[in-house]
Image 1 (tube, rainbow, N blue to C red):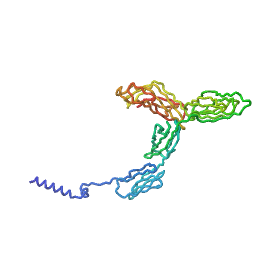
Image 2: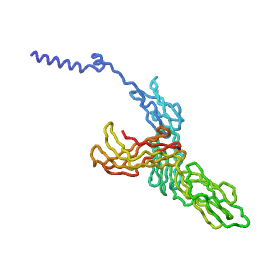
Image 3: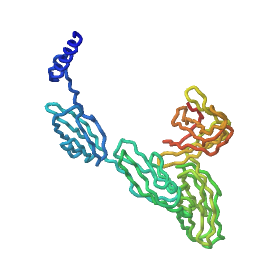
Image 4: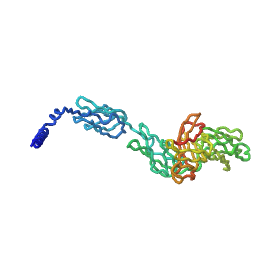
Length: 403
């Protein structure tokens, strides 16, 4: 009987507690209710012209009044939707009662330097995106026709058309590239010689049949012509050299100034207008960038932490360098053989050959050359890595391990 009485009392207590209001219950147990602090979801943001963003005040159930300090830069609706209008900076304010919450909005208006260009096979053009500090991602719709590097340098590979896209955030800007076949010949310019009396036997010759010149430097060749009329030159590849006559005959001699534009070899053809005889001068343009290479063979190691993962023996290394606009592009080429793999001799993985490029004892750039996936004992050849330099001069290449 006593047990039954205790059970009934306990049931009555439970029913009484259930009938107490939440406020009363909180008071009974001394519980305090604290609301989460209101906060705007973005305090600063960068938008591209035309983009929109939804702002909101979290932790708030009251009415929010939205406003913009610069409506010409960015507008905001009564529901907090921000639209970027023009380049500049604006402050978006969310007012809740007497409290204000702000978001600084920076609007950028990126612009691609060209919307269409025409190039000849082998030529290059550096596209640029201005009006933004954000990362630009470059791509080509047809890499067989045109390739584009991560700095916007466009390289024409074969005749055709392609679209280069510069992506900033989720906005895309495009340039149509038309690539034409290279024409034979090149720049021509004639120089007329006065007719002597009596007319001598016609002779056309050059002081040399080949010369070397550095990029952005000049060399002169003397041309002898004993006939009358004019002499003129034609450059096979005007991307490699420029030519200009140094005016004024000295008896039967005149000088031709040849200026190197880009590393490579081409031919300058000198022809006379009397009987169309010609002489040819081979011009070798040397890159203004020279790189001292390390001795080979040399072993290069790939580590993960302190664990040796792979190794390869570099048996040959060479480079190519040429001028691109106001800077210089270089390629490092590596041949070698994989000599070690932590997991097994038949494990097919890449080897990485690190390098640093020094000028006057200071590292100016670094990178690595990746082999294809090979097993121990397998060789690879002609693998390359591309880099860029801001100025000409002599550099030294040092191979490094990868960690």
